Length: 438
Image (cartoon, rainbow, N blue to C red; front, side):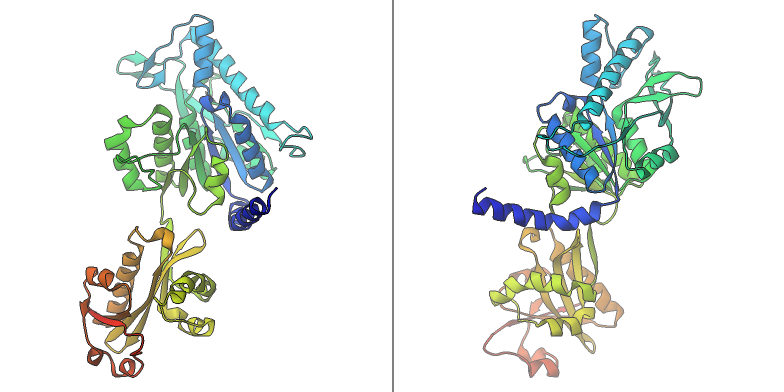
């Protein structure tokens, strides 16, 4: 290993440490289509899942089997029909469906049992538990078409699942469900994964598909969807998505709608996509989230280090006035921050002078300067200032005058500043002065 490669590895490993700590003890539901089981990257996916388990992540794996079923039916020269994207499972095809799903499940179990000395899974000793975790009922007749042995999830046995996870096992669920009458139903793996994730109130749904995620009309990867944005995209652009991406996005939306905090699309064709998604700040795919992924909040004393790290490059360039740690600690209650996965990516402070206040230390991380975050911080500070009876803001800046003009600030003079601030004005620095009535 070269020195540069080793340095890159050490840097990546150190930066992944917060995510390792954050994911430990969390419950992830992983949705893996049957197409992934036959892909060249399948062994790497299994290795990455084994790594997650070794790091203390509680895993529920839900696998699909559509291509395996197709192959079985074709081999038996059995015709298959679909209605509203659901396979019609009749008496003749049910046996082949069960064989194909069983083969897919055994493939997963065998892969998770690998432990040769020369393999990445050496010593993992993973316990895999499968069972009748899912109760099902028939889809019945839709538009006059009887789907027969094709069913839908009725209930998830969460207590049984939780006991397995508490024991340190990986729960492996197939797209099958059982009824109280002893019948077995062919389910979609997406239906199973969605219901399991919501029943467990999982911390994440990881939906594997055959692309990095969802792209906009310009071919740019969409990194985040709120629930509303996701719903709108499905309604207006859903028909343009590939089958696997569309299924993954629909499951992500439904899961988050039912209480799962985050759902992420992961590319099963790309080696390391899962680790890149989970152990880097921005991930690699499209994420759907039900709450505020980037948290906008008042700063606390614990944020001092993060703020100093954020503003240091701007201080070095002379854009911001230098602040010592001691000063920042004293003024921390005047700061608001935007946090993403434990990292401060934007900050701003408000310093009152009676009915006027100074807006200061407005900073955004270089990687996040085009998302309106500084504007969101400004709006939050303006609201807070209004509640304090402050009716006017002022700001001193050397290099960001145009941005403040765009936010409704107007030029002012030194004489317009509060008396206390006039005496502290640095003539050598020559900052431009702007005001805004709120």
